[in-house]
Length: 498
Image (cartoon, rainbow, N blue to C red; front, side):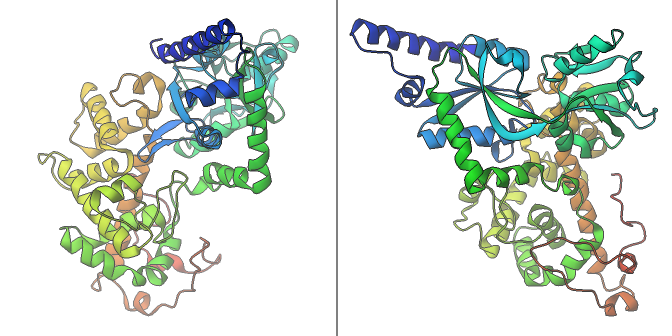
């Protein structure tokens, strides 16, 4: 495991410092003093959307953001190393080669003599999942003759062991090579019948695997924790506890939980009826901006507007969990790159977004014909060019066409599964997101093209009065309203399969 050399270097530094302190007659510095002296907080983690991952805007993940804030509160740099799995994380911590482990694990009695545990404000349960085409398991007795699949060294194993005491024939298989997304994919395809995953990881990933159903839970909600090596003194442990107390008291922790776990059912699709409302009530304020900057950059203004809606729902003051902001949700680096100094100014944001998308589009090989070249550009705009190229290489290796969107979109989701992203150059990515991103923008574009073409609009639609919708809350029209009539017949209310 070559990544451990960084931790060994840190451990050696601490050992040398200890020798110096002893030979000079001074007492050994505390863990917290050592961290501040080096100026670095070392954490070991793994790829998972609930823990840590590289987003197009930089590092992200619920636990990562907490660790970054904690390091900032200590006035030190956060240095992250990514492990292959939980087994490696626990091994690193057992040898005191990292200060904190972010593993997405719940507290357990067996950790008492190995680690100090710091609750991070979330609870999770071990959830039994199955494919909706099979009979739903109602309880553990229904699984006695069915192999259960779990991630190696996960929290679920101890609950299965407890149940095995009452049901000796209960069996399970641990998968070191898979993560939660890999298990969900295999349940979705029917390759596996039953698995156990963490409820918080299921919540984040479930939208991508609609054939996966929840059966029952194995335990009461348990606290997710950070793990600190037992060899440390209690100074870092106490500092972390104090940090979380502050976050809970000032509401920051609840805000972060809402960002990552709130409204998960709306991640992929806002609703065509709500979109129509926003076209009527919100778009008119910004339509000239989209038209002007699209023309300057050789783009279809309706495509640019569709990107803006997917990014921010045409809210000029929108802010993401990772700090991107504005109508086109530009990162600070992207804004600097295209010469934008105020991302919250709608005109600058649309200008920057148009120029940046044009640059991304130009990077896609010219040999790829339209409209696929645009779909690739949208995917690259969302997930990053490197991850798109990884997916194209996987597509080609499988004997399919890497220049055709309908082929590549099948392989982008594999970038979220360990057995695939470990074979790529740029590693883990939430590969489902660019597929849904492109799908949504194509849908919004189609509706915009239909609504903005007078030759396609019926007299009834043109004169129809629609209720207003506030800018702050996304709501659906009243039940029974005839909103369906303002949508093209072939769209309906269900996202199309691209």
